[in-house]
Amino acid sequence: VSALEHEEYFSKMREEINESREGLAAFLHGLNFKVFPSKINAVLLKFSAADCAYKFFEHLKKENIIVSRGNGNSNFGLDDTFVRIAIGNQEQMEKVRQVIADFKVKFPAIYHCSGNL
Image (cartoon, helix red, strand yellow):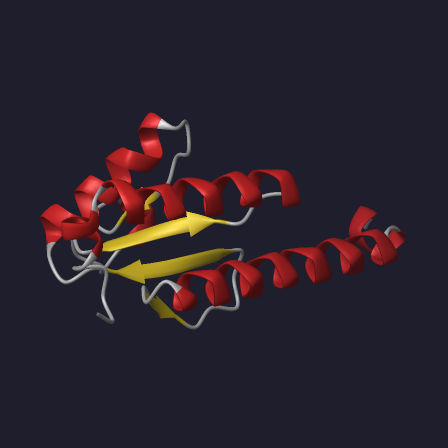
């Protein structure tokens, strides 16, 4: 009932989430990550090896960015080569982009197993 009373607010939130998701997906595509199409509030990445996905996961974790790995309960059916990034607000997503760009620079060998390279 509350959602119906605040349809304009929820519509705006959906639009912002969609824009943030598409912006992050485009950023990741630009860095040659393998990104799966999504309609939810997350972006799904696939790495060519589980150890690469783990190192990416750990790099983000060290920067206080918590993402989901494919082997978790919230990602049923995915293996350890997947990482899921939930969409946050603009400020949070800017930090995510910075940390991912930093990953590319700090770990070029690992970055090369990020999917499309």
